[in-house]
Amino acid sequence: MHELSVCQALIAQVEQIAAQHAAQGVKSVHLRLGPLSGVEPQLLQDAYPMACAGSVAAGSVLLIDLAPLKVKCQTCGAETQASPNRLLCGQCGDYHTQVVSGDEMLLMSVELIQGAA
Amino acid sequence: MCNTCGCNITPGNRTHAYKPVNGVTAVSVLQNLLAKNDDQAAHNRRHFDQHQVLAINFMSSPGSGKTALLEASIDALKNEFRIGVIEGDLETENDAERIRAKGVPAHQITTGSACHLDAHMVHDALHHFPLAGLDILFIENVGNLVCPASFDLGQHRNVTLLSVTEGDDKPAKYPVMFRAADAVLLTKSDLLQVLDDFDPERAESYVRKLASTAPVLQLSARKGLGMEAWLHWLRNELAQQRARLAGGATARPKVQPEGVALHA
Ligand SMILES: Nc1nc2c(ncn2[C@@H]2O[C@H](COP(=O)(O)OP(=O)(O)OP(=O)(O)O)[C@@H](O)[C@H]2O)c(=O)[nH]1
Ligand SMILES: [Mg+2]
Ligand SMILES: [Zn+2]
Ligand SMILES: [Zn+2]
Image 1 (cartoon, chains in turn green, orange):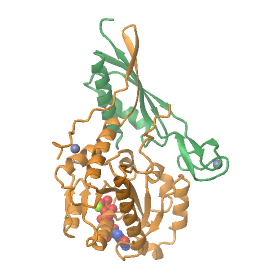
Image 2 (cartoon, helix red, strand yellow):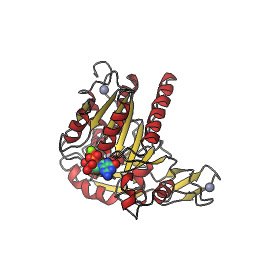
Image 3 (tube, chains in turn cyan, orange):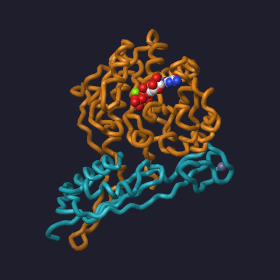
Image 4 (cartoon, helix red, strand yellow):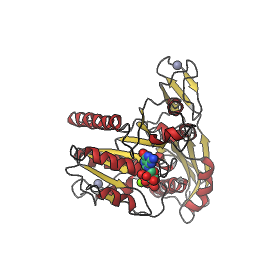
């Protein structure tokens, strides 16, 4: 599964941010994931402790917000809820829609622990 | 090759720190989780564009007929275009050898047992693989309907294969993969006559439910059925890409792995 590689990429990003801010540790890492991101939140949670062991992020908490899946119709303009294998317009049923939320895989924020503050 | 292009990638840094509270500082980041891969992919795309090469990523389950279609496409096009292949079969050299047997350069990415290719692996492969003079570069991804869809390699187009022995509901079961396809190929169509449960129209309707306008083409590489429509798609993509490059533009697959625009 690719969740471990995604997790390693995440930790590399967090390490970089921690170094920029001269942090001693990381308290939490906050993500936003959509159902069409291709990443399973639970698998990411499972991979997280292993991926951050030995890094500045060791012992931190991974918080994942789930983004709702919404599409915007190019035919009638409506913005409606959708499911991963049914991305049709909820209003008129057209398939010319665009995902406006639900395919994201974002690092939103990081809480850094700074030594002598 | 990268002495000239400057391979040191500097990812845009948009972090912003807030006031420390009890020694804890909240830093707002808002960056794609695979930002590093995406930067490398953009860099790969510049390599392809400098050499006027159209890069196509082949994705499917194991054994859906990716290599067989590459072989048949090479047979059909080798007097028309110069073709190169990067193979992502991580365990063996078999696929690369099959391609080389056709007289076409092939490079095997051997990176252990990864379940997908990423942009760094493809970039490393480019260092062993002269792009100069090529018209089309095919990248055969690892046989897997899940992981490859999340990693941009710098390709211009994604082609997803679904063999008729796999069941026509695969697009509904693997929406992330099939949504990413710029063309869906229903392969091994010669077997349709002995399979009564694969309905190509139903397969296509599952693709449409993913809001995809990608063409869904049936073909058999083994029996040479339906190859013309596929080859036509390919020629057309190459012509369009050349026209874009002439105007200083390039192409990315229609759907990006994870919405590149940060709709906050
Ligand atoms: N009947 C039939 N069999 C085919 C066709 N194309 C491929 N096959 C067979 O399907 C099997 C797998 O084909 P490959 O081309 O190796 O498939 P692949 O997707 O490259 O496989 P991996 O690289 O291992 O994921 C082989 O036994 C092929 O002979 C076809 O058009 N018709
Ligand atoms: Mg193969
Ligand atoms: Zn509509
Ligand atoms: Zn380079």
